[in-house]
Length: 229
Ligand code: SAH
Image 1: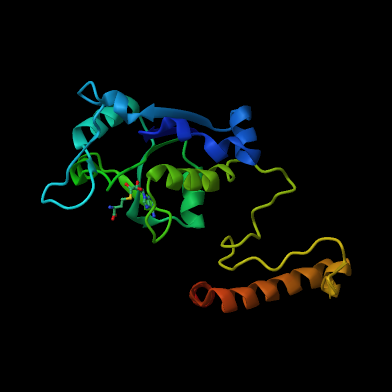
Image 2: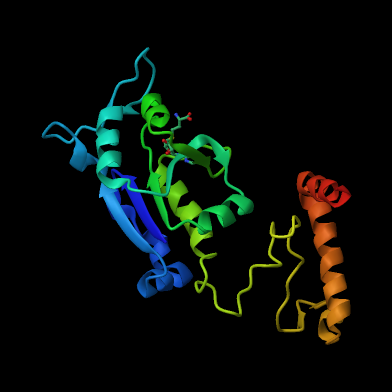
């Protein structure tokens, strides 16, 4: 997968994506990163990319003309995404969908965001990583990309399976344990030491349901509804 990032802080990348599984995958060429400095497309010698909001108010807005010049010169094909708190909420289902793309171009906003007209004119898809406000789209892009890259075939080893993780089945993951078998007077549930695969699978499924019901009643309701159809 080819990832292009349009940003005014290209030096932030690859950041934490350069470590661990995503970093190894980058070294192996399972994904490629290209950063584009939006400032290189500014029309003045100061590299201005923003201006004050029409109608007044706090902060600055990223100019449509400069951003569009950066898009035109760098966006070729595939998904064109603007990280935005007003976007479609990122879910594991969306992450799966995006992991199948060959090329993704991501626009990172700063200040109070970008001029609406460029979103309309270039039909840019908006994605949010949650209902809170960050200082910049770079952080959001890196979180989204981390989730996407780990699903690219070959990134996770055989030992790290994704199929029974939280959200993959519509439920949260069951509790996990490792050695020591007794710690702080607490024992690992006996069934997990039994070697009985069917009983372990049943116990894990029951625990998943219990945990989801308690911690995320909203998810649990969706899970029940999906079972009805
Ligand atoms: N004024 C905007 C917020 C701007 S925050 C508003 O109220 O909607 C500055 C930049 O950070 C945005 O342009 C966006 O790229 C990024 N950003 C902030 N919160 C985000 C979120 N929850 N998801 C994705 N991107 C976000």
